[in-house]
Length: 88
Image (cartoon, rainbow, N blue to C red; front, side):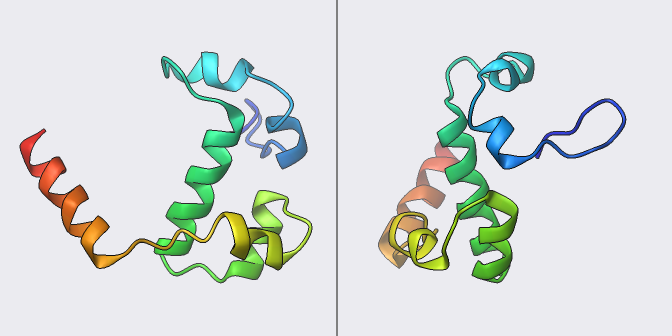
């Protein structure tokens, strides 16, 4: 998600310990945890294997990812979000 000026990717443990990235992004309010959760959700919805999401996101076990960061959305939730997006 974020890289150093030389293109090297920030390590997950660095991102979870600072708010500097949020300030640099221009987002009004967001915690590093929000970014991590968003990454997990977007990656899983895109079909990325959970073991790869686990590695890239820095989770220790797939079971933690499955329990707290599934990225699953019911069809009713999906339709609701699509309706909201059309009105925005």
